[in-house]
Length: 144
Image 1 (tube, rainbow, N blue to C red):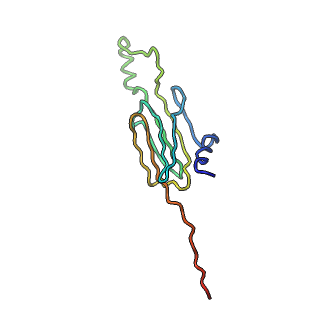
Image 2: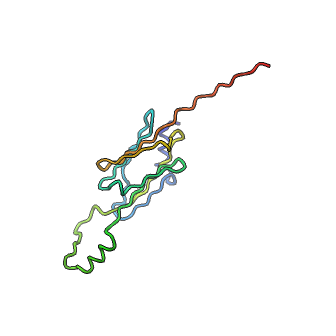
Image 3: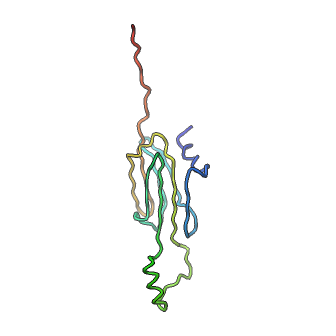
């Protein structure tokens, strides 16, 4: 079994990841997962979002990336009711806020204590270091 097959189970098994979509297109962000000698790299397209909209966590060897974009605050909505004449109304709204939650089961050699994330130009990049491969332990035989 190669390492990528661990990620494949996630897409084939509906129970391996949790998706919840709010208002919007209902589509999930596109993700690339790459393995190098030293780490696992995730690149997730999140156009129009900021780092404050994103929550990343690792628990029990599961990486979870979630985001919630909030609509206008309720205070602003109440102000709009009082100013109905100057109220803005969407004629077309294709970029409605949405939320998602996506989880990835990490391979056994992923070192969740050594992870880092960056967010540049709408792309979230997460690197999770790999532990060195465990070498077989040689046991000396004592002569009695």
